Image 1 (cartoon, chains in turn purple, yellow):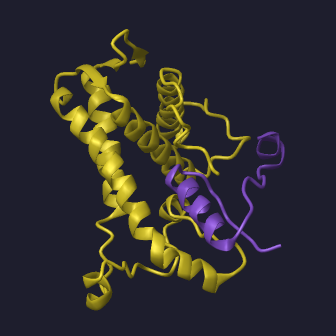
Image 2 (cartoon, one colour):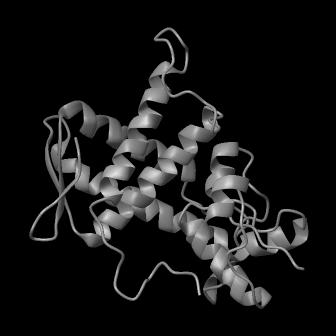
Length: 39
Length: 188
């Protein structure tokens, strides 16, 4: 949360692509600007 | 207008005519912006088996694109694929929320009165207030440094006032609710 506040972004979830896509969809439903990337 | 939590658990707010009318107009605009989401080139076979074949390109309108963002910042193919399977639901969820806001405001139009919301309606209101702020903020190109108080003759003065008011309402409503038991909103 502090990262979001200070840098404007933060990693909030990691895991399999399917699981993270699910999280991203939920964050979008809450109006959050979530993106995902492969490390 | 300020949201209050009653002992019964309901959340209420007293709205004057202007407040009810403004919020309803904003929610109507949001519904219009979201559209009905029906893709013109819908694949009938996919629809028949319940597979949505939604749009694949991000909306051109920056405000709508903010409501329905790309999931992959640097992978267009993956972003399109994600959008194809999620955008309809996302749109529909937002439309449902705005519809709840309108339905709860309907009895107050033209005369004001007391709004009383149950827990699900509070969630719909929180989501819609947030969406409205995102749309207005995108249109006004609001950043952290944007002053919300500007001279009256500024062309954005009125809109910034509404933007600030929506944020204040959001905070007032949020202060009335406790997290749901079990943390429904928690990412895993």
